[in-house]
Image (tube, rainbow, N blue to C red; front, side):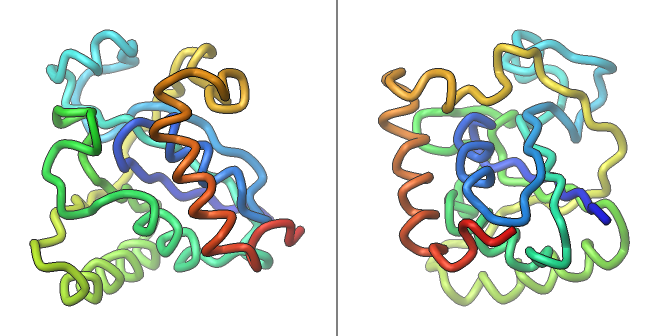
Length: 176
């Protein structure tokens, strides 16, 4: 049995690379969600006019990896206090967002976000919204970090997130 979770925490290349490290993750797909434009392109999303965020959809085995563990990794690999930005990426398409698939995910994410507020000096601004439609990003954006590990952006931004997951969540890596 598989379940899905959808997160946006800046550039989807970074979030995808971090999530793929976890045991129990069956697939991670980069895409767009949370906006109003049907079947948007990368260029359209980057314009900031579609309302969509760059997100990843994680398909996972809940017998191996729980949703709250995905939330833990998601929040550990981006700054949820940054409004409409992560690192060098600026715009609403890079906002921190959890798109829930059902009421249980909504409740778990809301509780997690509430608990996080006490850990930061600044307010956690992560958006919590129902997933309406997920649009798969163009093929060149899938597995980007794997395909381009020496790309300057990947070395500077994705690689540190992958390393953080490997160090902080080593027990969750390799579980199958």
